[in-house]
Image (cartoon, rainbow, N blue to C red; front, top):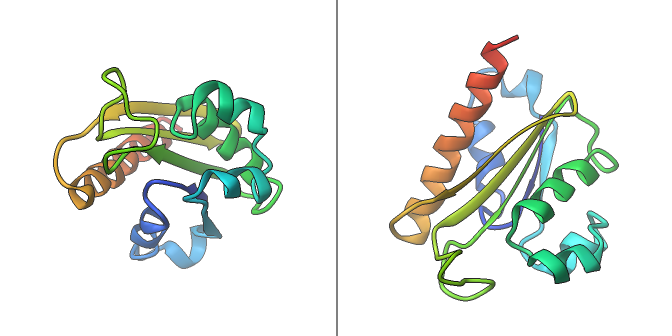
Length: 141
């Protein structure tokens, strides 16, 4: 399992490291909080960021896809979103909007959710929702 994180800035990977089996499944993660790092490290095309914003399902999907070139893994998880005011915030995409894409052996599962609360609460809710999504998907197999 590998992570490419923006809004959660490594917290998602850190939480997964607390699992009893983390040594067997966790490969690592990258925190690419700034949009420039999404381009320079993950090689997300700037045009995609310009078209959809750094905090979008499209960019999150591309982060998950491109992570394989840096940290090959059967499960790749990417997250972007808005935990504080600013960025690409709009009425349609308010603070608390989070995007998560997981590629499980290249099969995509994802969500876009709007969470309420402080920055920390939004991140905790994102981590919990991601864990639930991954668990539900992995239990299908």
